[in-house]
Amino acid sequence: MSRFGRFRQPSVIPGFGLTFGFTLAYFSLIILVPLVALVLRSAGLGWNGFWAAALDPRVLASLRTSFVTALIAAGINVVFGTLIAWVLVRYRFPGRRIFDAMVDLPFALPTAVAGIALTAIYAPNGIVGQFAAQLGWRIAYTPIGITIAMIFIGLPFVVRTIQPILEETSKEVEEASATLGANRFQTISRVLLPSLAPAIMTGFALAFARAVGEYGSVIFIAGNIPFVSEIAPLLIVIRLEEFNYAGAAVIATVMLAISFVMLFVINLIQAWSRRRYGYGS
Amino acid sequence: MEVRVQNVRKEFDRFPALHDVSLDIKSGELIALLGPSGSGKTTLLRLIAGLERPTAGKIFFGQEDASEKSVQERNIGFVFQHYALFRHMTILENVSFGLEVRPRATRPSKAEIRRRALELLDLVQLSGLEKRYPSQLSGGQRQRVALARALAIEPGVLLLDEPFGALDAQVRRELRKWLREIHDRTGHTTVFVTHDQEEALELADRLCVMSQGKIEQVGTPDTVYDQPQSPFVFGFIGESSALPVNIERGDIWLGDRPIGISSPEASGAARLFFRPHDIELVEGDAALSGVVASSRRVGGTRRVELDIGGAARRVEIDLPFDHPAGERSQISFRPKRWKLFPPTDQPPLS
Image (cartoon, rainbow over all chains, first blue to last red; front, side, top):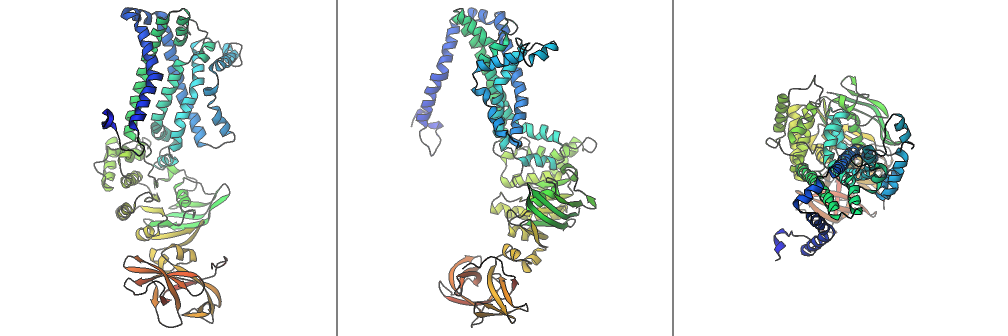
């Protein structure tokens, strides 16, 4: 009996020790060791040094830009991603498969390509940007542009997490709601959306995480003006170019901590709702 | 409430699911739509509910033409085969849902909604489970919640789509009895769909037997069982065997032998239908006779499969379980109750 004996479940596929050991080793190698190295590197500055670097106004501004734009982008993605998933699951129309495949394009496209394309469109002389410019709006080179790039790269995460759950949700549940007298709005707000909530939350978490870490597509459209449209990942690169490795590690550690806490909370909410509603019923 | 289905036709993408169906459902009765899959019974139920629109024809609720009314306006209770409960709501919230979504003018107070929901949960014998979630209940319990939820809106008509289809045999039997009790107590006009003839015979006041988008026969369980109007009904309700026969000068012949029963019908080919238990064993030539091919016990009797005559045709008859006939022994019998139908167009199996 190994030390893990009490976690072992009877199973037709044996090998708890092997798979668990491999998982731990792999997880350490790929995720844990680099992250620990990162934290250790930033710890090299000492307590005061760490906080001095972390609370630098330019760092704080870039963190705020990154997290605020990522939150807004994930929020917008949740709304429209749910809508797209709905249309793809519920309706049969010509070109649906092509449309469906196109949802994944932001996954596949090199992010720099996406950034350059978006900049070309939203720059003040671009196809869309010129109309915005007439209204006195600037999109490229502002946080709005950053948000648009983040929406672009985060959309597939939301669509792809909600789609299977929506396919699983039977039409009967909506019909039951209608027979009970609920109008369309009530059916959507009281029956459909609450049952999708866990999937929506997962999609939100994934889109948010991706947006916070996004670099390639954002830096083209952001304009990268310190205190205005400079994202934290870019500031990390700038610190690296200044050979200020510890400073880069400090920003990275702070980002890591904030992201981890947010994702962990979302996971807790999900686990709670999953326990409550059960799945596959 | 009375429901009248008038010459309703329904096509899905040009594929006809119902051909010109008419049915009168009496107020307060419990009627079963019975048929094999693909017979259009669920389509008919969904048309009554308003979940589908008829291609042609009308549906009346009482004197009112409901054909153009939406599902919400029809005030029906619908129970789905797979329960369709709202899994993010507690049992109490599920049952209250229909009252809570009402417009403010007709919505009862919160306390009143709660009182009515608890009363219904008591009716379906689920008191004490109101705080649970659907995933924490068994199949039978979930279906009872679904029924309570449907009853909460005080529907004019209660529609059930294979309500016990997903449950195991024992729970099915219990729920069947219990549904009958609830119906007798509440008196809702109830239509339920089933493919299980035993369930329909036991539960319903009247049966509506359907096949291939048409109604074959409507009547009480006794009428439908004892006087089937078509070969389909004879074969679908209860057990039966069929033999191709000839009528000559009033006598019925199987191949080159008279079988000892006569019919006033005109001479010619026909198909003879009878039930395994409606037979008598006889001695002599003028009878159906065959060799025992297999036998198995069914309840208190023995069901025997006989090879009749030269044509490799098999029929089933019931014998007392202590009858001495064994494999390959010869048995002669005559049907006591039987019915002739015109021959099929299909070539006989041989």
